[in-house]
Amino acid sequence: MQSVEASGEPAARTVSVAPPPKVRTINLSFFYGSFQALNRISLDAAANRVTALIGPSGCGKTTFLRCINRLNDLVEAGRMEGRVELDGEDIYASEVDVVHLRKRVGMVFQKPNPFPMSIFDNIAYGPRIHGVRARSELEDLIERSLRRAYLWDEVKDILGQSGLQLSGGQQQRLCIARVLAVDPDVILMDEPCSALDPVATSRIEDLMMELRDEYTVIIVTHNMQQAQRASDFTGFFLHGALEEFQETSALFLNPEKRVTEDYISGRFG
Image (cartoon, rainbow, N blue to C red; front, side, top):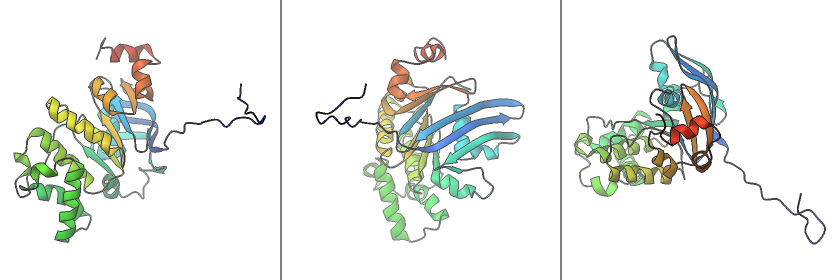
């Protein structure tokens, strides 16, 4: 029943409005030759939120991520069906510039992959490709990116040193800073903490929560606790299908499907 104020007029209702989707997939399927890795995935990743994707190894999570910035274009015999939208626009339309798309949708991989060059040049690489040449502009951009990645204080005096000489956790934050340097809209993270120690993992999780203020983050993780700590929404993948998608707290406390409950409780996976 609708409540009524003392004046006799209906009381105003408080409506919780979810952020609009930044990334939307509609009936997304992907094939490696005759093998179907994704089966009609429809998912909305909200703007300025962290969306986690969980599920057993080989269930399609990484393939899904790679569809969002078209890295699967590089897969021989790969074939996509369905639609992927960024801000409502089809990223697979013929007029889309893939280089510009990958500037807007950056990716951090499972294993840190610094380029075999200095810390400075690692961060400057993307901006230079996109036309930034002035040294002063690059210096400002590099400092800002490293500060965002919580790495500046650790490397500000060794910017000429090879990025490969940093620790694993520092290398991963360097890769995040490299993505931030081109000012993306979306950051994809494919198990970014799987090779890191607990301290480095905690720093990356804190960073993810900070990044959502400015970016849309989609992360693949096998760590159930990490998904609960660091994400707003969670999708559960199984055998290439999206079995369930909810706000993270709801999915872990009250999953809609028995198979989801079995997975998050450790009965399989």
